[in-house]
Structure formats: C-alpha cells, structure tokens
Length: 223
Image 1 (tube, rainbow, N blue to C red):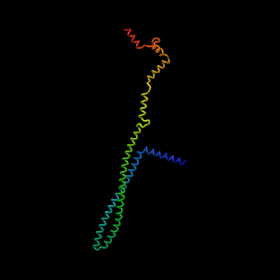
Image 2: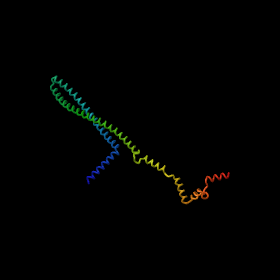
Image 3: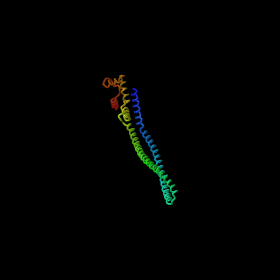
Image 4: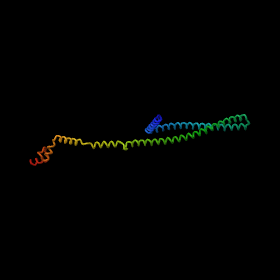
C-alpha cells in the first residue's frame, strides 16, 4: 500500500510540475535564455583572456628568437676572433634560451589550440542562443494566439453564447401590458361584470356600453 501511495504522490507531483511548466513556459524560456547569455558572456571573457595570453607568448617567443639570433652571431664572431672563452659563455646562454624557446613554443601551441576550440564553442553557443531567441519569439506569438482562441466559441459556454442567451431571454420575455389586459379580463369574468355585455351583444337586453354604431346613429339623428 505504501508503494502505491508513493507512486500516486510521485505521479501527482509530476503532473503538477508539467502543469506549472506549461503555465509559465514563456517565463522559463526567457530565464533559460538569460542564463545562456550569462554563460556565453563568461565564455567570451575566457576566450579574450586566452587570446591575450597567446599574443603575449607569441611576442615573448619572437623576442627570444631575436635574442637567439643575436647571440648566435656574437658567438660566431667570438669563435672567428679566437675568443673561445666568450664563445663558450655564448654557447651556454644559447643553450638556455633554446630550452626556453621549446617551452614557450609549446605554450604558444597549447594556447592556440585552446583558443581555436573555445572560439568554436563560443560561435556555436552564439548561434544557438540566436535560435533560442527566435524560438522564444515564436512561442510568445503562439501563446497569444492560444489566449485569443480560448475566448472564441469552442463548444463550451462562451461569451458569445452567453450574450445570445441573454438577448433571447429579453426578446422572448412576456409583454407586461398584454399580461395586465389578460388579468383584467380574468377579473371581469370572475366578477361577472362582462356577462351582461356578452348577453347584450347576443341580443338579450339593452346594451350596457356605448358602441361606435350608437355614436354614428346619434350623429345622423341630430343632423
């Protein structure tokens, strides 16, 4: 039973998380894009530092090559002049500089390799962020369309259907004047006030009310 309850709780949590993600999808996309932008800016900073170090090492290597060339000429001249002591000192200095050159050349190559790789990563990240921003724009447009569609008739009780029902209720409402006239007629029948009128109309007894025919007859007799 505990396992079943645990499974149900996990399922409910997963559904709640999915619902939350769907509700705030646009906000989550924007936040992830901001995080990606921050990561890209950090990567660009690292790339700039690598490029700067690479250039510095290249300048130091070029300077070292100049020193080696200069010392080589000096050692050659010393040997030609029979100054073996100076030539030997120059040879020691050349050996140290050549060893240093090997290390600096390796450093330059290593930094160049790192720079190339990081530059490729930065360019790829930049393209992906552009795609993400375009996708976010599309997602916002779709979300607006979905919001508008929800306001249109969709088979459920919509605003249009509610308005139509209210109009129908008003237009089909009973006429209060007709209702009052019917009530007066009912009251006359119950009180027998209308019975004498109906019997007079049928020819039984004198008329109880003046009609248009009576008025015309009176006008003709007076004339």
